[in-house]
Length: 292
Ligand SMILES: Nc1nc2c(ncn2[C@@H]2O[C@H](COP(=O)(O)OP(=O)(O)OP(=O)(O)O)[C@@H](O)[C@H]2O)c(=O)[nH]1
Ligand SMILES: [Mg+2]
Image 1 (cartoon, helix red, strand yellow):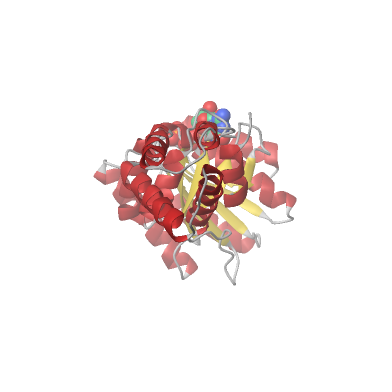
Image 2 (cartoon, rainbow, N blue to C red; image 1 turned 120 degrees about the horizontal axis):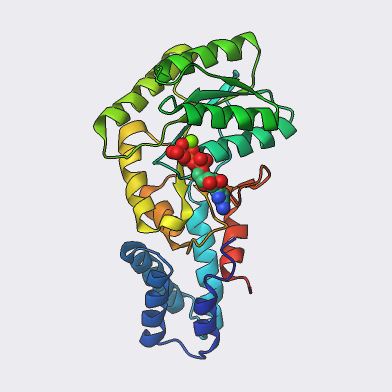
């Protein structure tokens, strides 16, 4: 995943002996080309310049080590595991625009949790298309977990209500709620999401334990704007970065962390069931700089 995307930065730093303005300018350009926003790039490079002065870094190798540490620190801000509530079931609501990987991520997480001996239920609250309900059902069978569903066109909040009842009756540990992909700009759909959120809060006596915004890691700056609007609408508590095995440049992930302060909790690295991992900042930065 993302292997070697920051190699160019490494090459730049290793081809230089001394530290001068030109080095920092080139570094800035490379970060922007790797999809880091101007704002975040400026912060990173300013801190590097400052560190170079303060720590009296004398060569590019020193800058390189410092940059890596700086990136790890940035990604560690607010880093945490998935919330485990004191009383089950844990309820994780998945939201995001069309096609980012919500349903697949739910299936993969269900698989992961099941292997950790948790009893998982899936709620098919994407009632928009019959195919979406069937898709979740197929994943449920493959993973070996129950899917709570109603017919196409029914109220997503009613499906969630059913799922929470079922979770209680069956003593489930976790409920994963699938929702329809929606453009963050469509107000009626965002209102529907708020309703789902309210039903969970009422039935559970607390908000969803996580409201996870799934982002397609290959979409660059657009992912940042999606994160902004969803955060305003439904209090997103964490991010799932899907498709990190694709052509993601990685920089947008740094931007999201720096500018939105929403922790990345999970990353998706493929279409197979086991292609999901808890986010590990150090490993992520190592991968960015790894040799291909
Ligand atoms: N390579 C790769 N493909 C992925 C990953 N996650 C999801 N996909 C693919 O992305 C496509 C969309 O995935 P879905 O899980 O259906 O996305 P969704 O967000 O539920 O889509 P809608 O319900 O239509 O909004 C599918 O072809 C998935 O196989 C991933 O981590 N890596
Ligand atoms: Mg889906």
